[in-house]
Image (cartoon, rainbow, N blue to C red; front, top):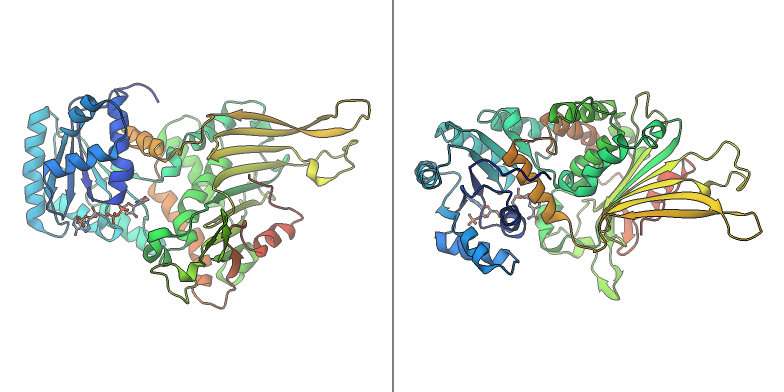
Length: 489
Ligand code: NAP
């Protein structure tokens, strides 16, 4: 990240008393402040229904920050203002207009406003239309909207939401958060691909056998059972994060690193995805649901026994799929994806399996000698390249040799950093690492027919024991092609 200081701005957070604000947004804004990346002339206006005061909000912000520098925290917290606010009430917007003008006067902020929607998605449209109706987006500066996931629950609702928010904001003012795009190693995919002459010439169906993407979690649904049961892994992970990773891995080199050019290439990948029809979804996609198991020596419950989950639920907590990209570069290369909860390990990893040598004198064509490039996104961040080398000694045998590059040695979660980077990008007006409306709609159009197949309990939902890497059907999906999942731990 360049050390550009950001323009004088007010960040308005809808849902400031919520979980996301406390866990991610306040700490991220503080980290930017501490690093000197935030202009001193900034303000944060927190909104929610609770009858908090500036003082209460500042206390909560203080608690959310871990830093030993008490003076700095105190100075930082003074930039926070709270307004009791109901998104559905007119007078709330009238009060907000007044407060924003006052705060902008205090700091000399020229009307630059970021509206951060960190509240229930059902309110996104209402907020946008009210901002427009009360002229809160008409300032002498710029106005931008950051919008959280989920962005719709299918193509039709995403399109409707787009229509609603685009009444108040133009596409280049809308920053749709996909926090995976804020992760360092995800941003590194483009650098690895487009700044290394040894990879790009091999990045196609002549040399790559298949691509494997794993986003696995060890946690179950925790206290989010009510939300999750209406969502499932396809909506929660595949439509957004997984398809974003697919497009970054498969896109052609952009002609420039501008948001427009990068998005243009990513959109081309999504357009080239071979649609999966509802009738044959089972051939390409597997859905699973966790049953009880032992994790860390403790018995954990099955999904259907989780709090706020229907005991008859057919919501998937696991998805595995085979995606096909029909273009010159990728036809014939399966992109296998899998994601799920209560799996053996918490890992986000991409493995590129290269084709075997046409004649490998050392291994007689055995498949497990393949060269593998692993892009390790979390918890370990780095790259691993598996090559073959000569075994020491006189036997003349070849053995796998692993080259490892670790971005960080410690195991810190990169999520707060992702938010930090994305808020900073938005302050600077750089939308590269946010999802464009076309990306969102194309992703929904791809997953909708599969979700339709899964609406009924006629399509099998494969059970998997908690603490494993998913149902056997996920292994079978690759075995049909003569492939297998490479270990991710
Ligand atoms: P949350 O804890 O339920 O917070 C919701 C917020 O909205 C609260 O501040 C609530 O405060 C406020 N609110 C509810 N009704 C309101 C109304 N009528 N008028 C004004 N404010 C209202 O939710 P969250 O976990 O922070 O999530 C916020 C958004 O981020 C959601 O879209 C979620 O899908 C997304 N997200 C969250 C996470 C996460 O880790 N939490 C991760 C990814 C995406 P009052 O009750 O005081 O009004």
